[in-house]
Length: 109
Image 1: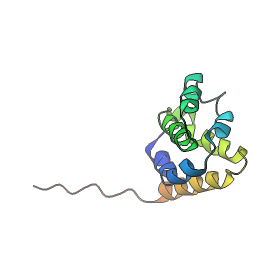
Image 2: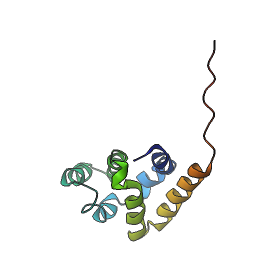
Image 3: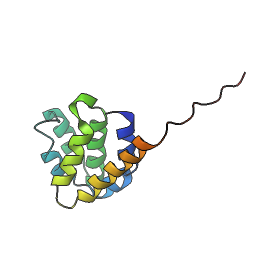
């Protein structure tokens, strides 16, 4: 996943960790994005909070050409009670995408 998309999700990581039902979201990702090992890693976590964080960590590591952000967004849309999360990460991504790049740091001589 590219940096802008990671940052869009990172804006809401605390909300995701508190409220996201990772197992339900994963149901929409396990056949076209997640490997069985990924699913097992998420399911091995003891709490909802930890499962949500583990799922996001795994998504961050997926190659951009597999479209992890877009598939995560679609899975949130399909998961009851999670449409607002999908809207928020899309809005955050659009804001990051539309903002001008940061100035490079000044170097001292």
